[in-house]
Length: 245
Image (cartoon, rainbow, N blue to C red):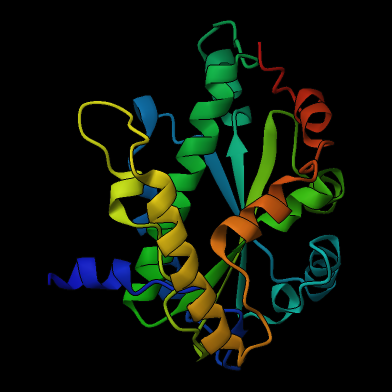
């Protein structure tokens, strides 16, 4: 197996880090690797904020549901989908900026996510580990206030990075036949495959938690999705200039 493929397939979320700083030059190289991710029409519609201030870290950890590793990790990054800079580019060239279209929101969010995953992979390639923090969207207005995030910009997620103290075992992914189709979207046989996958996920959690947790994938997803997920986001995004026209 090629070493890059092996690296990607060995990804795990890391939440416990060694008390070891990440060299600033190394971090810059990792961020630059993120910049070379694919970007739609070269818009590069993201801004990454490194949060070093201890007080802000503490506040972000609380806003993200009291996730202590947000405060404790050596490096914490906030990834923002950014149409503000594109608005300034339009203004510099005396062009109207149509920021409110849904497609622009999608472009900025996808661009941000692609850059972030490049950064995660680059970090892992040099021995670091990390975890995404989607819970910043629990309180997005407070995050924006804390970090001075302007109009037409929103925090998509955070990322903890550092040298792993503890690494979990690799969590089984959905079988390839469920996510990789040919010529058309098919459902044939999917339910039986899901049942087998449920069994593998149950075994994974039993082993990882010494029997404390034993839920299946479909049980976990149904419990998660039965509740309304961050219903405040629609109004928040509209107020930030993402009107979804």
